[in-house]
Amino acid sequence: MCNKSFTLKHSLKKHLSTHTNKKSYVCEICQRSFRVKTNLNNHLISHTGEKPFVCEICNEAFAQNTALNLHLRIHSGDKPFVCEICNRAFARRVYLKLHLLTHTKEKPHSCDICSKGFSLKQSLKQHLRTHTKEKPYVCQICSRRFSCKSHLNRHLQTHTTDKPYVCKICYRAFHLKSRLESHLHNHAKEKPHSCNVCSKSFSMKCYLNRHLQIHTKEKSHACDVCDRTFSSKSNLKNHQILHTGEKLFVCEECNKAFAHNYQLKQHALSHKGEKPFVCEICNKSFTQKHSLKKHLSIHTNEKPYVCEMCHKAFSMRNILNTHLLTHTGERSFVCELCNKSFTENYRLNLHLLTHTGEKPFVCEICNKAFKQKHSLKKHLLAHSGEKSFVCEICNKAFVHQTYLNTHLITHMKEKTHICDLCNKGFSFKQDLRRHLLTHTKEKPYVCEICSIGFSRKSHLNRHLYTHKKEKPYVCEVCTKSYSEEWYLRKHLLIHAKEKP
Image (cartoon, rainbow, N blue to C red):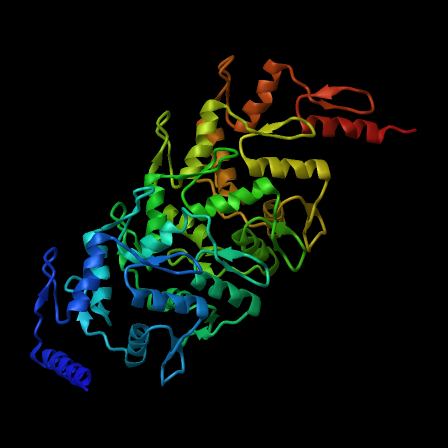
């Protein structure tokens, strides 16, 4: 009986303190005050760093027992707090409160700098860091800094190999449960989030939010170097790497460096020989998903990304971004040897090979070397004889789509590039440039051995064989050898005309 009265008296005291707003228990370290002593004791653990409550499933430790209980709901999937408007369930009450703001669309906290509104004060604080560039959360492993703690926690999982969330369909493992949930939408082909403007649907709400910026054309993230604006912070970060040229992620097998970790992971598949992304139309397989998307545009001929300046259309956004640099004239990457500038870092790297003379990609059939991998791929088709691109007008077949496009102009007889000196017309701009050298008599390609100049690079390359005396192309009929393949083809016509 006595104990019961004490409990009632204690409850009354606690109740009265909530009305008087009395905070009598003060932390001696940070001066934060609490109404109840137990709350102060729980708070003091945050200063000691002690985490006595450990999850038996994943061994994650917590300072308070309540935090552990909340964490256990991740494993159990328990979501007791349900929204009365849309029946969506949440593991914590605070998440439900945040969700309810999406229905009311109330944004009481505004940014003093850009007037952007936010539902929560914490979201406003996080937003202000985009203006101040403050990044208080530091990774203790690689010293990388982040503007909010959740981004740091997500980053820390890239250092660990632990991926506890496994897809039961394809057995792919993930660091986060949210990543697994979004991945499962790919198998179910569910797209629950629809755009109100164009009715396009998405598997995740973040994808929908990103898509909506296409309609609003809001670009609040500006580059400090070139003042170019972007709709999302991630797009801005990707763009800024173009200016810095920083590549922190290095392949352990071939030492090739990448700007992003996902690029390194995709590159690693090329060493394993894995090509998980298969075209459903022609069964061609690819190591990367974006390569498959790029390939599909060949079948669909879809070009959704249009340049606002010249209305030229492109199949992929990154190609459009590269094209936009032709309008701005921006060339941030400069060669230190000849001061020639380029719009992209990879173009500068390709150019540097002209100075070093390095040709790392070698054909296993004829030992011909190339500076670029795609040049080797193109060359290999000459050995295979595969010509999959066919002209619909004359049925002539070609090795590459670019060759077919060039050929189609011969049917259209379009010559839009006109010489100002003699009014001669050309189908391509590079043909006009080449023609202009006949007027100026300029010969920019000079042989380093005998100083003879040439108007075309191909002519210089042909000339260099005279010094090397190499003749790798041999006639199988009379064993006569030639320095270039087209000489051999011309020679073979002699044998073709011979009568048996």
